[in-house]
Length: 163
Image (tube, rainbow, N blue to C red; front, side, top):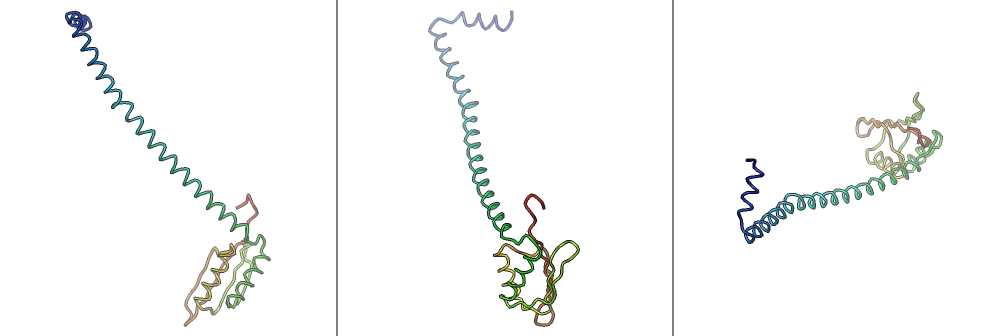
């Protein structure tokens, strides 16, 4: 006798009232198993996905805002070497930084050197340049007595779509 036949035999030996009570009990167990085994975890996963999505959207908006700010700064940068050199000279004079030498290197970068500059004046000048969207790609400073000897390298803004 197969297990299905044994189960059928066992079921038919029960009276109608017992069969009804067993059917209700099996239905309750099935509903309980479905609720706690499938539906509840699925709801928790859905809520976690909603939270993750909301966090990702907030992060995307922050990144887009930061990208807009960076693009605004890049748009402020002088696009050619002559404009960059003029801006650097003008801001250095306003900050009280004496530029000793200026030159264009082999990579079309603008290099400025200062033989004797005070650290606060140098930092104030660099802050002023940064507010205008220009900052050095390289800065070397070494102590020379009470003052600094410094060299800063700047790059003109590249045309859009090119690095």
